[in-house]
Amino acid sequence: MTATATLVTSRSAPPPASPAGRRFDWGQPFVYLIALVIAAIAIGPVLYVFIGGFRTTADLNANPAGLPDPWTFQNWSAVLSAPRFWGNVFASMVLATATTAGVVIAGIMAAFVLARYDFRGRQGLYTLFAAGLMFPLTVAALPLTLLLRTLGLHGTYLGVIIPGIAFALPTTIIILVPFLRAIPDELEEAATIDGATRMQFFWRILLPLSKPGLVTVGILAFVASWNGYLLPLLVISTGSLPQELWPLPLGVTQFSTQYSQDTGAVLAYTSLAMIPALVFFLMAEKRIVGGLTGAVKG
Image (cartoon, rainbow, N blue to C red):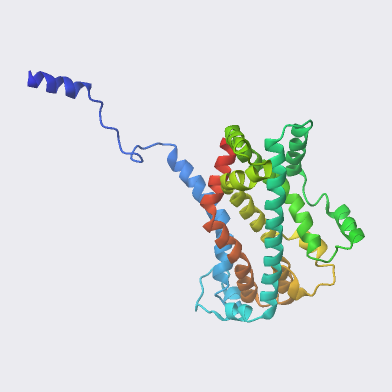
């Protein structure tokens, strides 16, 4: 009887599943190869610029594709000791922080109305924001410049911050609206029964629940503003602000033009300009993916 039960059990038990990742797929090597090629194309120039900052100009001219021999920190120390670099960092920090704050505040308020209120034209307004994703800054360069001159904002930080917020709002709305729509109506009904107003529901319940989406749009807005070049070029470079108060993308261009013969210093300056946004983006990568995943689910 025992032998029969053992035989039945052994026959009915499913075979052990093979460990994940050990099953060979003929398509995977090609996928990995394509992924490695794309990663090399994306990371290669960044690594070249970063490593090139540790080489002298003579070494770069003699062997552009070689490694530092010897490794030198002179270029980095020269850039870090220049007040001009820190002035550019200050300008980029002001622009990125103000733009991010404006995008998050305006975006959450607009998304709240589109997601939680039912009114005529709501879908058309949402479609208008979605269409803003296909409206490039280059198309608006001339009319935007004329408008800023008329308003007296040309050559000022506000002339960069306000259009930066406007151009970042479509992406912000597209990400936040699904988050707010996914919050159950029962929560708002329960809050209303407890005596909460719409604004109290917004501050105490809706904002904490939509934190992943807010973090995502904030990071995207910060990185985009930090790396923005065309808008500061149109507004700031032709104004009266000194070069020490230009943002980093303009500072890199001006520095590379002024010190074009010192290739090592130019590469070091470019590397230092990239590091803050790169570190910030890598540290918040999981939050960005989580926020975008929540938006898609919503």
